[in-house]
Amino acid sequence: MKDQENSRESLLEELAAAKERIRELEASEIERKEAEKALLASEAQYRELVEKANSIILRRDPYGHITFLNEYAQRFFGYEKDEILGRHVVGTIVPERDSYGRNLKEKIEEHSRHPERYTTTENENMRRSGERVWIAWTNSAIRDEDGRVVEILCVGNDITEEKRLEEQLFQSQKREAIGRLAGGVVHDFNNLLTIVTGYSEIMLMRIDQESPLCHMANQIKTAGERAANLTQQLHSLSGRQVLQPKAIDVNSIVASMEKILQRLVGDSIELVSALEEGLGTVMADPSRMEQIILNLVLNAQEAMSEGGILTIRTRNVEIAEGDPALNPDLEPGPYVMLQVSDTGGGKHEKVRVRMFEPLDSARLKEDGAGRGLSVVFGIVKHCGGTIQADRDSGVGTSYRVFLPRVQEPPSPIRPSVTWMESVEGEETVLLAEDDDTLRMLLKEVLEQKGYTVLEACDGWEALKICRRQERPIHLMVTDIVMPGMSGYELAERAVSLAPEMKVLYMSGYAERAVPDRCVLAPDAIVIEKPFSPSFLLRKVREMLRS
Image 1 (cartoon, one colour):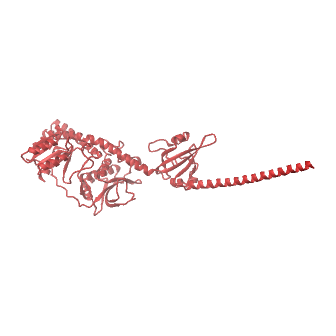
Image 2 (cartoon, rainbow, N blue to C red; image 1 turned 135 degrees about the vertical axis):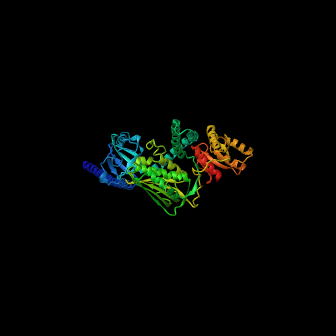
């Protein structure tokens, strides 16, 4: 009986234990289901976050094949999911080669071999349309239990606009550096060129035209003039130019140049002017505006070797905040737009990006072609404007110059002395020039035409001459850049001593003495070195007769 009771108690205990075990299993199953449910919810939430994220999210295998692409990435690159899954990134969303010519397939393989080296990268990518874009990537390696890389998770953001602004800043800094280099040498070099061209012109006037020496002197003069053309390019790059801005009518300048421009481009190119009536005025140096037009036209001619249509267009424009024409160089407001368009083949994208770079070796030719665009850029910047290049698919290129519009009426243009008028005179001229050889040349040129010349090697000596001179000094010809005292300071002090004296400036644009965007009074006259003796005499006569 006792054994039966023990057996019964044992069975009851086993039954209770079994029931407890059942309850534990039921609780565990509930927990498992709850965990599974939570996992599914977490996965759904994660997938929704990934799909709806405003960032590019993709995964690729170690060989570069795309295994996942979120909705934003599909819209950004222009592909449906079933079109792109399984495709290699190179040739799909990555170009075969970047702008530097590097093989990007090799770069992708390098990323897969050493993912720890490339956790953050900036790469040039490609939309379905072929448009190049820059993306900043954050990359994470996904590994299996053995530590092998099975996938790369890549999260990216479009930084194309930031790269564009960065490139603009880089180009601006590069121009500034080249400008400083140019400005540091052009002054002394132009003094030398003025001496070369000056004495060669004097020799040509004195040598018999049949003499063999005449040909040699002509060659020297021609070489000097070609060198002067080169320094003219450096002037515009130096950023230390002497400007004589006036309120000008761009239409009048275009109209005055039409005949010479048509002769320059030839009969195979049709020159069309579309000038807006009532065009506003801009504040600019008239000679610089002519240089802008000339260089843009010559550049267009170069793009139309087989002929075409070259259109010069002007228009009043209002640039508002957010306007596509607005870039970091411009403020919203009223502008005058000068547009020069051609129907040539346009420029390759790599060339177009670099077209405004100063002294781009890809565009420098022996005859000087290609330098004009960087010169135009420099002049436009000095006028407070900007220039943009737009290529229409396969039908040519348009250059648009934007210059701030002003309310002032156009300034009258001073009449100049013609080549037929006499350049002789009897007046007294004070010549201030620190270069001894150049001063000697200019003194000889002026004295040969009857002028009385008082020479000074610097500003201080010129002031001494003004103080002790008993006879009136009719004109002072002074270099802008001189040691100790600039031509500006000299003119201010000297005119107070001799109020009737007029001033003619000479400039070689040296960076060390000419401040940024140096601006003279609208009625001041500056002659740029190098210049010829005949040009100097015309300007002297022009000053004295006015």
